[in-house]
Length: 402
Image (tube, rainbow, N blue to C red; front, top):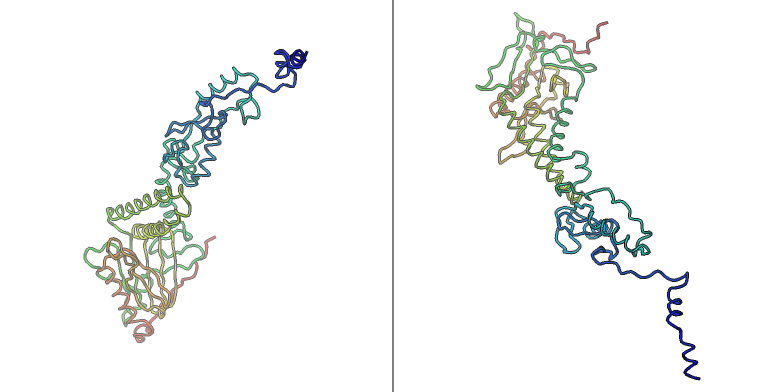
């Protein structure tokens, strides 16, 4: 009887089966997910599998991007499985894995992979390289803006913008020797308005400097002492090409380095700022010697200084001659041990650059002519001649003709 009670109390195989899964509230059967369909990072089945182009390993897209953001804030990304340094962050959808996952889901209609909110397989995310182009080179806002060959384009753009700004500064067309000035600015008189001018003999081989002088009035002529210094553009085509070509090469190298540094760290890229300043200085010097003309007119009372580039007035200065102190050459930089000098005219505490890139003999020629004129006529150096006859020159703004 005892053994019969025990046998009656023990569940039969049918009852056990009903208790384990025969009811409506039974839990779904646990299905083991294949390891080759699981991401090495999340250990969950692939939802959007991508493979790293450089290593060939497959990961969940979102998990891989989060891994790179957390462990590689710079461009030095590594493969999660091998820990090898990656030169490229380019990833592509692994369509084979997607098809295998779809086949597994079809074979297990009642199973939902762990970590999934549903059995639905979303389409792959838009292909993106997370800071890399198709060739594996880092990309950012600079590359997106300029596309391929961004460093070269940036350098070329910098050169063009600088030249355009230099050409657009100032108002109104101007040309050396014209009587009419730019709109809203005083006109510069021609030296011929002061009397008969004679041209001083320039150094042999000089092609940029022309100096003309009007002597003081005599008993036989009416004139006002005046000195005109005209510095033209560089005539040698080879010199222009060499200067601007080296500047373009400098910008290309600096732009390439800055572009690469921006991909690593914007703060690191700031170290290129001094090189950009040097490049713009070389560009300004080369552009002025190739395209800028300077005209200085000095009388015993007033001096005029204007610079013209691309037939437009770039700058204009007018002052009293008695404030002029001297003209000198000043070194502003050394390139490969060679001093780079400017010809500078000093007006009290102010200074005006007359020319860049002149030969030392041309600098001495201009300095000597200005110094001699100032010594003779400045501050009444020769009042009996300078004030004997003074011609009145109208330097007001010409009235527009109706």
